[in-house]
Image (cartoon, rainbow, N blue to C red; front, side):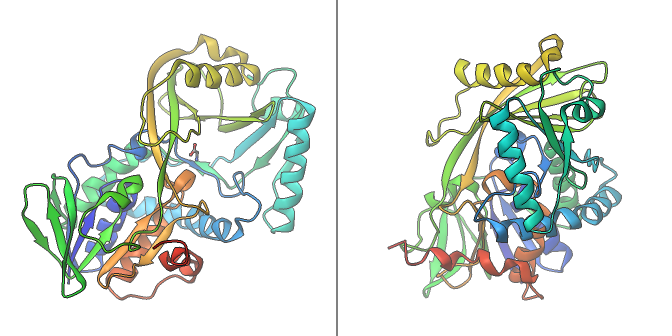
Length: 374
Ligand code: GLY
């Protein structure tokens, strides 16, 4: 079976590796692998901390992925000898004022009703866990099984794993899907050549709707949602685990790495394909982070970046067969691309090679949008 995958972001890379490991011949097409959202993302693995009303199927998918992460990372690190910065030390969520605390209380009740309780913490308990937190922090929640990973290290390991399992990487832009006899027959590159394939997976993140050659309605609606992220550095311990905060209703998070990097994110902006870093975006992040962790102003500044999350109308990914025979879709992971990598790769590779598809995939079929597209 010849499989072509458009897009070597974190989902395309992981799926290429798993699909090649399942015995298929895989070609991965991307001019700049791992250069999109996965190079910007902080890498929180937080299905419980980020659970949202009306998104319970996404919680189940996220839990399945989080619970499969350890084995996924172990296999990847064993194969490549590369470390991914995978951590399972929990996530603390803290509240700045009484309204923020009320929100966290409601969230805790919602988590409890779903059977994924987080532990309620007083302000003092929050500071015992994270001594750099401001004295005014009102309280918080601990999700002990959530965690984090370094997406840059993860994609580097996935690239190495793909290479070792025989994935052919074509560093060119895909201009379209080649369609013959009303079915996908390969990928048309920007220089006009066609890579022929029995099946094509479109995993081009927010650019998934931009390819030529596709009948209308083939690709579900996906749009970019910008996130600005700051990278800081510390030589002394600052936060011991990923720390999320609400500051007057505005969300901010810090994700520490073992090497002293601290990732501070993220804005959420509907600005199309704009990836400019703005003074206002950075100011909001630093302002809110300083309210929670005043010592942040002492940290060394390292980098600012902006990425584009691929978002669908229901905030959930699209995983599965499209209306065009032979074309599969794997995009729309929005705020959860890193978390959902193992389960999405398992689902998509199973579909591509006709293996047994994990049951959690059910609600994420592309055809759920078919009434909305024309
Ligand atoms: N999952 C965090 C973000 O998208 O900002």
